[in-house]
Every structure is written in structure tokens, then in C-alpha cells.
Image (cartoon, rainbow, N blue to C red):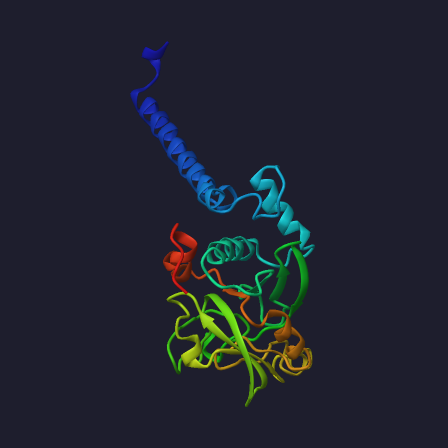
Length: 260
């Protein structure tokens, strides 16, 4: 029977089988390397750190995310935020170590994209509007920089520092903890309130939030309250699905944490 099958058909069938096998293998590699099944993170973050209990680690991280009761926060942002937070907590002086703030710059500027999370209970304390830099983009944050005068936002992990009063009234200084934001203090990148970071401004500006000179600016009417929650040594993470940052950040890619 096989002798009657044309040689060309056998060659073609073999090629299809090989192609399917390669494609399936590639798919499996992608799935296995996904952060949802990351053995690296499992090794560096205990179930106790992820909320306690004896249950499966993957179940734990899903439960913690679901505890927020707000799926508008990109899961990648949540994952990397926790990953960096726990690594930094081992060596940084996070005096306010029950708080993790995540700014999700994958979202449109009109969205409330800054999330303040209690990492002891995984309760979402609040979320708010947050502006990005003038040269980072219009409605969406696209370009990022650590260069003075760039008027762009910086990505990565920061530690909140001291408050002060100046041209922005009540403001909060930030210390960058990565190469991507190491010049934050020198650049004057601070958390402050602004009239252009409000719902009223969005309505007057064709559905787009105003932009800063690189600061994560907040609604002026609530900025003081928010600053008082996260000031004095909490973890502040600005996230984007920017491949340059995700590929180069030592903090989220390597076992060794960065120096503060």
C-alpha cells in the first residue's frame, strides 16, 4: 500500500508534521516562560510573602490580584510590581512597607491608572488619575527617559521620600532605584497636585488628561491626602509594557536586587 503513495506526498506530509511540531514547541516555550508560571518568581517570593497560607503559589498570586476587586490594573503591572517590591523589601528601608503604589501607563490618560495597594491585605485603598510627561505622549504614554530636560516620565521602582512645600504647594520627592529612573531627584521628579490632572480638565480637553514635565502629577484636590498615605519610604512603581525597560531592568529580571 505504501509503495503506491507518491514520494512527493510523503515529503509534503513530513514537512507538515515537522512544521506543526516546531510551532507547537514554540507555543509551549512561550506559555512556560509566561510570568503566570514563573519558577523564578516562585523561588524568590514565598507563599508567606504572597499573603500567607499553605496553598499553591499560583493560586495565591491569582487570589491576591482578585482581592483588589479591580481588573483594570494590568496583571503584568501587578506581577512585576510585587516581584520588585519583595526583592527591594529585603534590602531597602521601606519604612512605609505596607504600601505599594503602581502607576499603570498602559492605560489611557483619562483613566484612573494609579493604584495604592495594602500589601498586607491586598486591599485596593484607592485609585486616581495620574499625568505623564509632556514628551512621553498625548493620550497614551509611549516614550520614557531618565535625562534631565527630556520632559518625559521615567519607568521603574522608586522609594517615596520627604514632603516639602514649594512651587507645587505640597509635594513628595522620589528617589529612583533603577538605572531607568536614577536621576529622579536631580531632575526634580516629584508627586504633586495639578489643575491639569483632574476630571474637569479631561472634559475640557477632548477626553485627554493634561501632561507634566515628567512628574506623576495627581488631581490637585486629593493630592495632599494621597501624598500622606504613601510618603516616607513606600514603594512606588511606574509600569509600561515598554520592551526596553522590561528587558533591561535588573530588578525584575535577575536574582540580585539593585542597590538603593
